[in-house]
Image 1: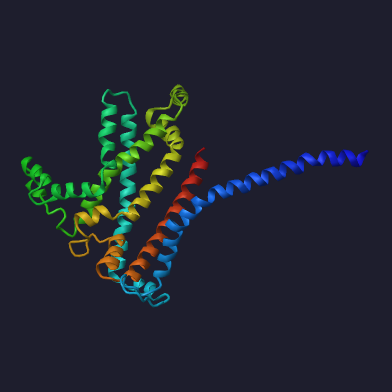
Image 2: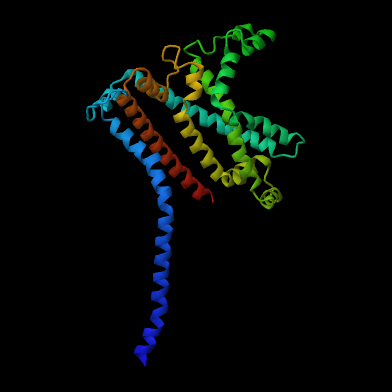
Length: 310
């Protein structure tokens, strides 16, 4: 009697487990086409790029010699590459800092009940959806010697500030950074705005009832609740700064001299202009490693801060 009961009770479990396994196998078969496309479109090019980074291929010849770590040794001793890396790191540091401070300030201002808030949100966000090349050509004209910026400065009596904004090696990189900040500050503003609107009004009212002023409420209540938005914005903007290419290439091509050359531009120059495809791929591989490490560290630190603030 006991044996029969045990056998009867165990059957539904075995049947349910088998059914789940069959459903799992069917689901895997449905995923095969997508995995195959992903392997062809993503994994194979990545694997090919990693292999080419260890060759002397010029991008055209049918032969390519495996050179081991020679390209990496060349990179570490390449003064132009190190200069380009420094420029890229400057952009990736200054751009996220100013973009997030200004983006948060705009979000706080436009989270109020002013009548023009919807129009202003659209105005500030509009540059973020425009093509970087169009933005670059637009600002190339504004920065030109007889362009809009110098004309306005002359009209208000500030002739001493008229500059060759993209022709001066000391100013060119900062002029480009200003354009990137102008273009993407609205992007950060939208993320912060979404975070602000998700904060329950009851918490702000409770803080006011407890006697907290606006500054105290903002620092002690709003900022901790915005921690997830801060994490997203900082990580995304840092990655964007480390990958920036279009604006720099279109506005200065890395010049004057190498004053605005970035690692992304240097990679393009080596691979497609000078025919050093293997070395150019090594530069891209180094940049990908830097982006991965910086993004992972930032995310880990900011997530820890989020948990501490919650």
